[in-house]
Image (cartoon, rainbow, N blue to C red; front, side):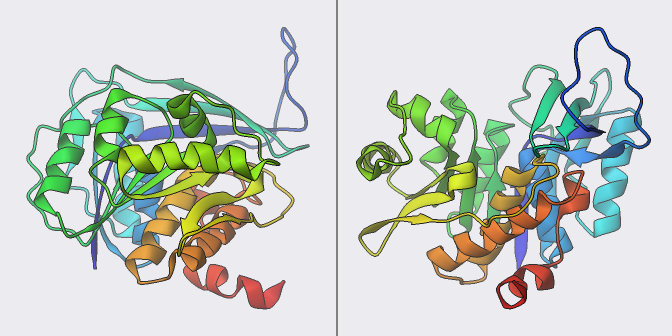
Length: 298
């Protein structure tokens, strides 16, 4: 099975803190975590780690961070021939304050203007496609070249490109924020009708399988004509960085391997939950066996 992932690559520096910092103070920490990041890139890393032949399509700079990202993907066995290094382009970097007291994080990202298309034409074939809205012309090219592939979009931000690409994939997996901005309605988790109303607007527009992720409340979708909230997995969180990216990579894996939708969401939720108990997005991706055995352990 082969996967192509198109999207944003960044380099993360995570600073674990006992509490959120106060302005104009100095702090010293013993350790910090560095690793690659980015929605589709983290998904690609997970797929490669779990044994899928994965190609990452992304733009990075010809710099230290770019080299580190390439090395990470090579070590995990991913295909980096479409991981483009560009002169006079600075690799995106994210600086993350991880509040260890509550598991929340604050992210500051330094990012150049979006690049619509990679220099190379992607002719490779794929069984699985994961995109995040970055490099939209390349993402569209990959989708058009692989019409029978199982395709997933990580719809985190509402943009014209995300709207266009969302109509081309088989699975739209969107954040609560995306759903609210699209529908111009606030979601009340305690009110099922509120969720159904927003979900139906997404379904009518995109005409595919829609999943709304609700963070700690789980995920909402429709299965066999019934609306369902698939609950999240309760854990004590240390760092939630990359949890959504990891969820999207995992659900792509499980759907691509024939798991029913509810089971795929459940296992993706387990994957994401395990990840927040560790620090650093890529370092927190569990082994596949750990996910599959989780229900038998707890």
